[in-house]
Length: 338
Image 1 (cartoon, rainbow, N blue to C red):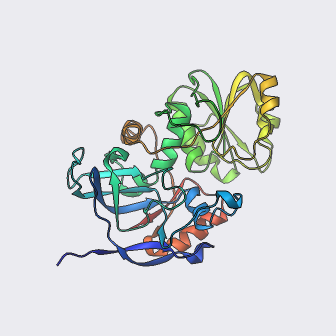
Image 2: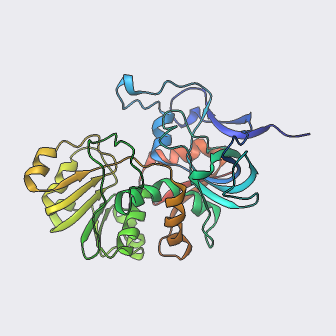
Image 3: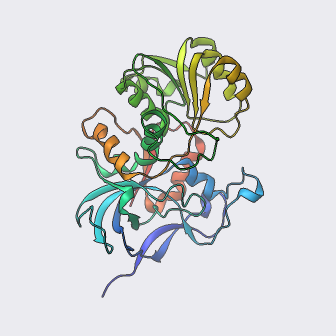
């Protein structure tokens, strides 16, 4: 008899890590153009934490109209176990990875914290050989964010953060400062910028220095000891992976004609100052893209880029994983093993 149930981590109400429930849930079925993936690993990303909390930092009118129960998570690595009608890009038995339905399901959960997930085949890529499912699950959202900011936007969808299309800038021979270099996006940005020929300044807390120098950072600034803007000079591009208050401080280190890329631009208020200084300020929202994930995955396959894993938890320990994320100072990615 066919088993139509699986284990998943679901929300029945918004709140802290304790609202995550590991329980039985209906097993999805691959719809036309989709594949069904047996999840081996899924990683945590900031949108998971924001959604679990009900996006309380947003104005009430922007908060999700939730239909509980819902399942968090966008990043997965696993094995194809079934094909929907018309799906032809992958075969049963293929190891694959993906960022699932983002930002389409930003407010409702994409369903990655589960034993099985159905995924549109256009969002999938073959898992790079030479890395395991844990490392592969840690890559999609962070790697696609870096790719779309620094290499190729890859789509023509309207930009929710600005009226103009985000444009990556040439990096070869340039100086790039990465703020939040120890985190999921930051440590990959350091490596991709180095691969493109940039001189990289990594800004993070001191615990990350050894790791970041090993990944290729040419200069390290411990922000707990020294303000980056007091040390860095003549920077061509700052990519800020942290957000929050006073992002405007980085304008003082950027050369005229340079750029400030903001992964989380919501609190930035220095647009007039930037225009007066001749500095481009730009942001974009990462989008699922299997073709880009396959292209970027070659860097994982040949070892040019590697995903650093902060910690792993079982799917049943999702609440503990979220507690770890809430403590901050994450080095790389937190991953759930299904």
